[in-house]
Length: 340
Image 1 (tube, rainbow, N blue to C red):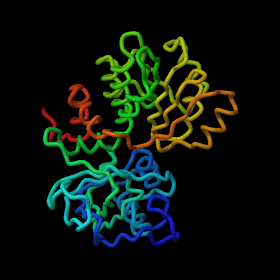
Image 2: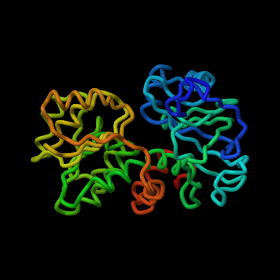
Image 3: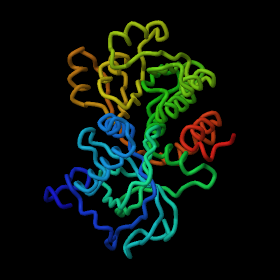
């Protein structure tokens, strides 16, 4: 850490990103950054969705901070690359030089050096780079699977925490609401919620536009019992539309959006003593805590931890178990590799 003195990597303002590994570190040749959805949305808006400006914005941020840590959203993303060098004290037997891997820890705590931005995909938040990254001995990573296209695996691993947490939180017979059901984390969350609630439970998705391909898949494949088209930032509109499909308030609400302002709608859709899981990195936890207090709602609110034991394999297995989602992810995130 360069500043402030004594800070751990995630909380630090600036890291030493010199691309030379210590004895307990791994040096990676970075190919792709997958910027998290909330962060990329903010950067794209600030740069008028211009790929060149977005790329320079990211490079400038990394030059200043030594890591991809968005100062507005506080979030980062993850990377894919190849192992270039392994420190002598790095845990043995996990990776070898030349192995292709994905980081499973945030770019907000990963020392990163970028020589060049080669491509920006505005539609997916994926940024091609030539660069280096340091992975600490405590850092999580996954070898890239042989049976899933790289870009699809990257998109899936980026949100691996959501489906794993849904498996923990949802019980048979529950009523579940997924806000932002048509995004990466929302689709995987709906699939797991559907599997968990069983025939006596109910899954309701909230999306801003029910005409998208993802929204149509949710309905056609039965991942949701009902889909509500509404802007979740408009609390009154949500409260007006939801009674038609949600006769009782939800046991569990999963928030997967990439914009702020949806905290209160999430809280109001949960029953008293229900659970609200804020996976979204756009969440204001001040707004959530004070909003719940203001409306007198006693709910358990959970921070969207991007890590859960086994989360990488759970997320990838979701695609294997749900071919419609695998096909959609291939079309959306790896069009060059998708079947015609």
